[in-house]
Length: 285
Image 1 (spheres, rainbow, N blue to C red):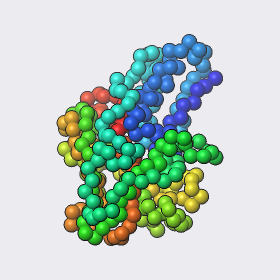
Image 2 (cartoon, one colour):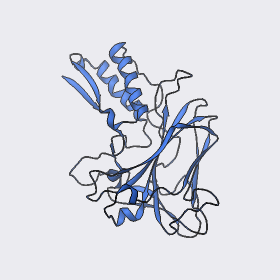
Image 3 (cartoon, rainbow, N blue to C red):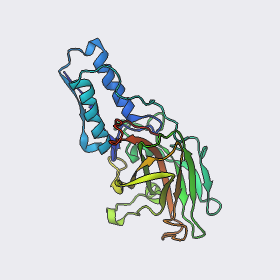
Image 4 (cartoon, rainbow, N blue to C red):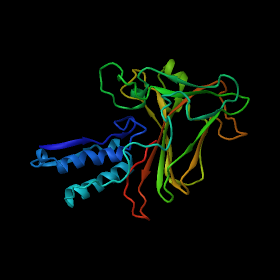
């Protein structure tokens, strides 16, 4: 028997669906059970499937797990980080706007909302062909309506960083109008992200950071174009500030005033730091 673990960690579908759980530590715990449970002593092998649906940091971490448990035959945990994380509070907006500081451009342009099964639409696997997940994971988000009077912004202090370690911010955004009134669109016809994500007090790694769009699948029947944000940075102190604006700059409004946008699922993960030899474990908010 060969055990195949699910590696899915990035869109359009993934099982890394809880922003307050360190996905790499969870991966480590699964392999640690295999390495220590007597009932697993006779297995013929194990694998993580599939790298085509995993971010590069997680693929690197799989290699370290293989070496630690399968090649070196160790039985202790590879990671030393906690499973549950507290870098950000209310990262999925499940408690409304608690923990976040909001600066709306005018009355009624920022609020917490929910949409049935949005977590699955975004790409969090809940199971196919069945009703929405009982816990409704990922169905909540922060809705913003762009205004010509100024930018809508919100921010929160990031806590518990380790100076010198690399972190990555994972964020998703889409046009709210596409969610409630879906229409078939090609990527070039979809509304791109109009705004700015700023992390203050850190050193940014622009070579590893990117923004790209993907079509939701397999739900809904008419796919929604979602923007996937991945920002890598190195902590300079124990705290930093995350701020999001729906204007590209303070005096750069962009276009499409009155457009509804929602921004969801703030996630932080610890990535490889070759200089200090720190293994690729994750910290998610």
